[in-house]
Amino acid sequence: MAQIEIRLPKMGESVTEATITNWLKNIGDSVAMDEPLVEVATDKVDNELPSEAAGTLVQILFEKDQVAQVGDVIAILSTDGGAVADAAPATNAPAPAAAPVIEMTSSAPANTNAPIAKGTSDRFYSPLVRTIAQKENISAQELAAIQGTGQDGRVTKKDMLHFLETRGAAPVSAPAAATSAAPSVAATPTTPTEAVAASSNMPAIKAPVVVPNSGDEIIEMDRMRKLIAEHMIMSVHVSPHVTSYVEADVTTIVKWRERMKNEFKKREGENLTFTPIFMEAVAKAIKDFPMINVSVSGTNIIKRKDINIGMAAALPSGNLIVPVIKNADRMNLVGLAKAVNELANNARNNKLKPEDIQGGTYTVTNVGTFGNVMGTPIINQPQVAILALGAIRKVPAVIETPEGDFIGIRHKMFLSHSYDHRVVDGALGGQFVRRVADYLEGFDPETTI
Image 1 (cartoon, rainbow, N blue to C red):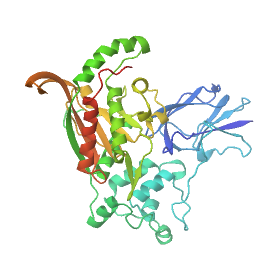
Image 2: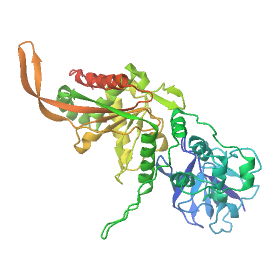
Image 3: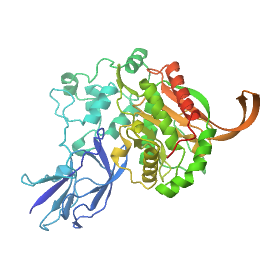
């Protein structure tokens, strides 16, 4: 029986695993080339994966809610209608040695798992698990004691996060062989944050246990909400946040958009929102202050060449996601308007691709959408700054003229700029947001689009 192995493809530069959320075909079903086969979820986005071969689905190696590593065989197709096999874990059904390998995308690499340390232990850990272990100073002894829930008892990201939540609650009991043979993964602090934690002997922080009262409703977080929660906690833990505020007069922009939006809609078939104008101002300010466009790796500062601006968008579930406008500084207003509309529509319709939400170097979030005048946004790691756009309001303001000052009605908004005080001082963080406001206030009313 000719068999074809279907592997989990590479779905982004930093994605090493995915959760199987739904099989779209059952055992025994025929599968056509490019027909959706399985739905998977990463910590970035949910995706349907099409089959790159035609045949009959004879075996499913990862059940719903199981985590597969990039390169793992997740299913087997038969090209000659051979007998089907029951769904089973990958360990119970090895593929025939002669079976051809078809990856679901040509870029899917083979599994690159390797031992965490040389020694007598033959346990394997994924690159993601190794990274978490090194970042959190988890010793090889502690790692060996973690009960893995993945394939072959492999330790998954979920296992690591659970371990970190309960770390310190009970003594670690590891096999003696692992204790004597394997040195610690990261015996000494490698970053300023780790050094502070190590020197202060900070105890593990535990969330309080909340007891529901009679009549309370208990709602389980969905997968994405759990990921967002983890990411936000990590960001606040890693970066000391400071927020600077500036008020900008955007009357000229409001009047210009009111004059241009109908013509733009008629010509381009799309709405002209304020967002592309804000993105243009942010891109210009980043070019003026490039040290806002950086990331921190240990004690190194990585200065980004590209200006890729993320914009927080709402999903149908109510969760937020951050699609990215790549090379925003190279686009004119029309290009920015089309990019903004396309990403926003794809977010609303769950059609974002993994590459749409990767590579961001700076993020903008519009809290004014909810009627908020300002906010204190949390940095989207590994970036070092984020800008919140407040609601545009009509307010009385003092207007200076050669003939004297008078009170007039102006359209104004607050810009709230949160930044990582490890590498962005108050002067840089404040000057940057002031420059964004200057570009908005200096918008040319004769701009054509």
